Length: 242
Image (cartoon, rainbow, N blue to C red; front, side, top):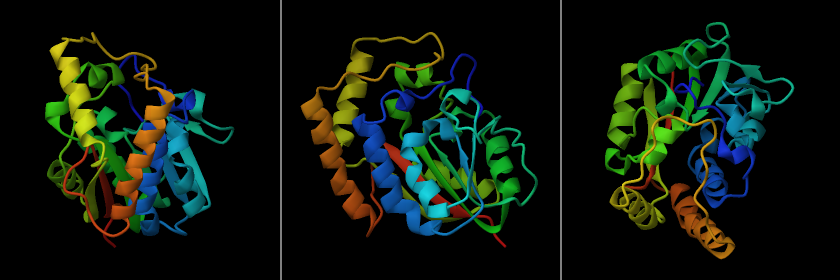
């Protein structure tokens, strides 16, 4: 991926059992796995956030990995930018970018690169953070350029030439806690002066960490059957038309 200056690593590398990463993996798999099962070769874009994408690599079998931060890359990973992917046209049957595109500016350049490296009929899976009202110092420290609504994400993908097959929110069950946390940040006037290398995660007691992970299981069960009308993330599956 391409990150804002100063931002690099994902906290998930050091804290793979943090409830949000565990839950995101489960929710993404529930919502999107069937869209890419057996698709190969595939590209895991932003793969230094690997703990959330293990299911994608299992589903696709043969997966290339790329990230701007080498710390989370394996021996066969490629260090590079989402704005200039070092792959030929129509290389992949599937591309995943989980919480990557919000870091990329210009957005249309990153989506154009994904479109370019996908084969006709290839699938793109994407997750992004939701709601501009939730913007806080945490977004600044993470090097985000924007947050999304479901409609905003669909519009961006369609403008890049994709056909959107599914668009849903995620983390609906934990949205009240998320909203309260963001309001508390604003009330205490927390400030971030710019992106940092690796963002510190909020401290969560072990019991609460377990409870939040279990609560997100409600979302996972629902996502196997239907779309969610609200939530703190947006999940999208799209296709490059043949």
